[in-house]
Amino acid sequence: MNKYVKIAIFSLILIFAAFVYWRFFFVFAEGVKGGTLNYYEKKGFVFKTWEGRLVQEGFQSPTAGALQSNEFRFSGMGTEVSEKLERASGKFVELRYKEYLGKLPWRGASRFVVYEVIEVGGREGSGNSEIPANKE
Image (cartoon, rainbow, N blue to C red):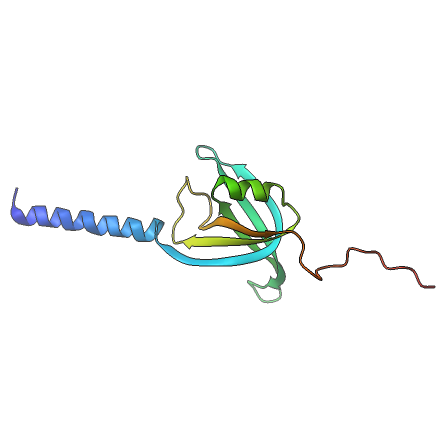
């Protein structure tokens, strides 16, 4: 085979490998999100992954005049995370996550992957759990 053809094939393989790494394994962002855990479930046809939704305080408006709650959809990674979040539905949780540029079926259905649960439980001063006395 010609020397230039070998160099071209090697270069294409190298560029393809760099693209795959950048698209599926490069961590674009890391952070912490907090809110009320709406659900956390294991689902999938071939790859069973843990998927959840966190409802955050406040509202966002994708179109003028419409309101919807801030939702954070994520995939869970690891048995420790799954064990904590299975018992935390309806509670306030803080989650540490990584954001990737692409999704992989065995990693989850979301680009956001939670790898640590920081806090589970209520926050100080959030809500009013007591019924006020009737002062008539």
